[in-house]
Length: 169
Image (cartoon, rainbow, N blue to C red; front, side, top):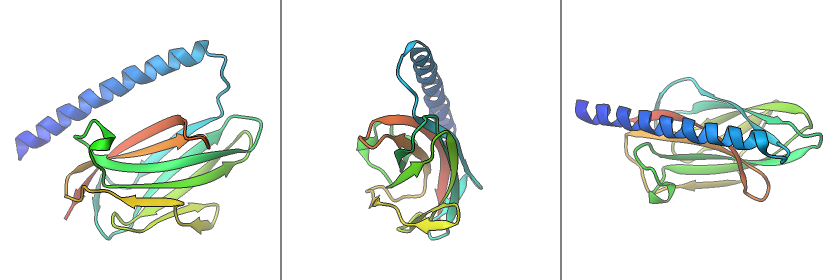
């Protein structure tokens, strides 16, 4: 059991190093690009690194719109086993919400998920279910990567943040 945790820890360090390298590469490409930046993720947080099925778990996400126009974004939560490097190998759950963000503003959302079949998006006092929800084929207690993807309305990915949570019980 201890060796598995050590291997998982080493895998996460390697994964983080690769993400840093990709991020640095994207940063330098962005410096020389003439493409306008429309938006990005400014925050992904949660109360605990441990979660249990059936208990509502809360996530906070901040989306920024850097453009001069109201922009529609697709926000996707994709939860997969942390040891899987290819998302198509299986996942725990995935849910998406279409959001409109006012020009040159940021919006903070609260997402509640029970790690079973209930997800809820809350923005400024109003609450709504995801536009799309699917439960994957992996459903065992283990370490999961909770990825939040921000995409434009055409599905092109603009930003991504990841946190790791251990599902117990």
